[in-house]
Figure 1 (cartoon, rainbow, N blue to C red):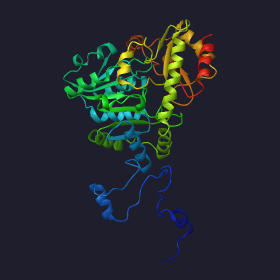
Figure 2 (tube, helix red, strand yellow):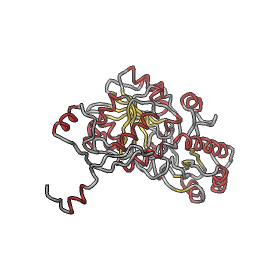
Figure 3 (cartoon, rainbow, N blue to C red):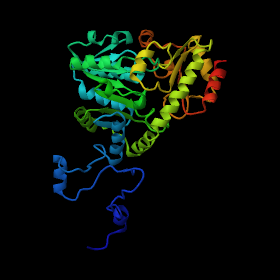
Figure 4 (cartoon, one colour):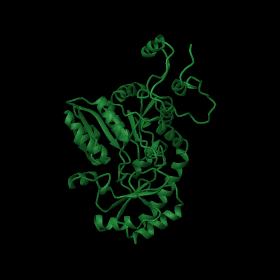
Amino acid sequence: MKQRGLSTELIHRGEDAPVRADSVNVPIYETTTFLFESADEVRRYQEGTLDKYLYSRYANPTVVVTEQKIAALDRAEAALVFASGMAASSTLLLTFLNPGDELLCSAATYGGTFHLVNDVLTRFKIAVRFATIEELADPDRLIGSRTRMCWIESPINPTLRCLDIARVARACRERGVLSVLDNTFASPINQQPLALGVDLAMQSATKYLNGHSDVTGGAVSGSRELLQRVDMMRRLLGPVMDPQAAFALARGLKTLPVRMARHNASAEAAARFLEQDRRVIRVFYPGLSSHPDHEVARAQMSGFSGMVTFEVAGGLEGASRVFDRFQVIRRATSLGGVDSLVSLPVLTSHYNYGEEELGRAGVTAGMLRVSIGLEDEADLIEDLDQALG
């Protein structure tokens, strides 16, 4: 063979070298496609008799390792990751719902989920029925002949109300309805949805799973049979996570247990401080005995997470005054990172909700939602104190 040209050498030199397997961390396979030795290899891959990778929209080694870690956390047979939490949600919904089906959804849910099912899903002739927390306490009466999926959160954004997950899951299973739980606010460290009987656990990996506010992602865990169906839809829709993001997510997962222990402890301390402060109307934290669902939370959670919501007088104007005075806690949306963040739900997660919709979700204009990070506990409480004025 004649000597190759410079362009060919630059493109191919070293690309066929075997990957060393003694790295502490999984390598980032930042590639769109993978090599085959022969047509026979391609045929065997397509037949499922050759364990190999074809194309990163289908599967990628870095992404697969991250999925295996999440499956282990959720005690699931399988898990899949996505480019965002909303990508995970939309793929799930489009996998299992068809025109004429009904989705039963908690009225108190993340704003993105609400608008996805209310504004988008209904365009495909899928009926959506919203149920309040009180109605979901008796799920047997809610499930109808057209209901194919039940979508719930617990704890719920931003009120941190908690549903009896096992009861909802049992009612769904007895009627052949698929149950999905958004476990973002709890994380697998504090709550195990599949062990409580839920079919599929969904999470925004942007939050606690990654934990550093530098990755956008979503995750779904469940049985291998259900996840195979979701995987086929993911391949068609294309919302796969990039290998670089998967690498950062896998790195964040390694510290999840120790991070959640700190989030849990500091959030409980902050909640107890706020509960005793007369400048605060109400505090929402499942770990407080005053929380309406405290006993439910105790029965199904091993920790109460790092989210604290509280309400002050004066509606949005009063909440905005407190919001503007924070010095340690930072003004930003999202949650679950090492930095403590504060947001105003009516201007972020529940923006563009009508008054009736806010009422059904239990959200008021005077609410502030705080994601307690990993800063010194005393500094956080001092900042809450001075922000209240």
